[in-house]
Image (cartoon, rainbow, N blue to C red; front, side, top):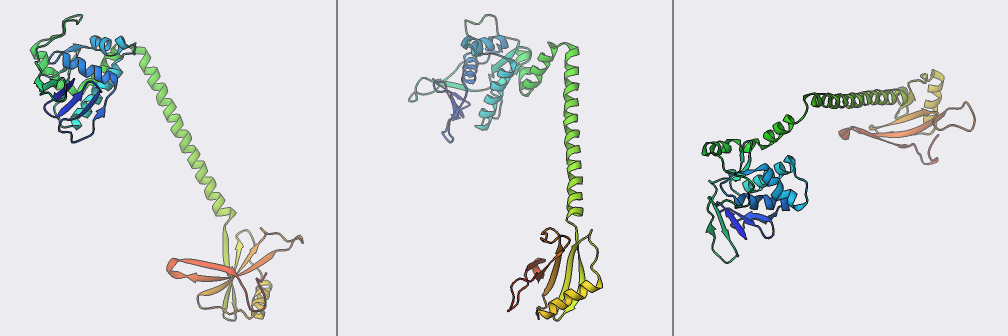
Length: 302
């Protein structure tokens, strides 16, 4: 059996899909409870159906657990799909304090097979096996259209009415305390981590460069840690003389850097090592490339 709503949305009850009637989009499958709910609303087109009846016909009779939350999800999903397919008016109306109904304003047609013509469905039909009357006054049905978007609020209110007044507040307060505790713990961890990182990077690896002088065409600098003392005049002169003996030539964009470090220790205790490197300045990229200082007669100088 196929049903068509407002000549726009096609509901295939055999395979449980909703699709545009002009076949402009792919069919969207819906769950079995959603299919049974939609069929129940069609069977009572224009008439409100009590929630308890919906629970029984859609969930309980099939061995499934019924709840207001399950019903809410089915109705919300059907409304979203149908609205996306071009029906702006709500297909399923909420009847306050009672249940739901397929609105009389919606044009509903049906057909048995794909080759048959659609037949208009009457809105006066009512199922004979309902356990109690479903009809309500016309004035209340008119009001139901204004409550189509309040299904979530209505269900929440009904559930709160059945809860003891002294139970909800402690649970809510406990959740808030847990939430604030987690937020404070994360904030403290980030704060401590930031301080530790700052101290580690600024103190453990802090270095300074000192200009020793000029040897030939090369400017000579020395890089040492902030905790080390500045080299004396005698050591400065020895290093400049060493560079001059090697007849090292530097371009205008180059300089020599002496790295004083105890990270690579000598086999002789108490001896510091000096590493000589040639650095090239690339100003457009604000970076410097440094490599071992070499000449024609010797490899890397240490």
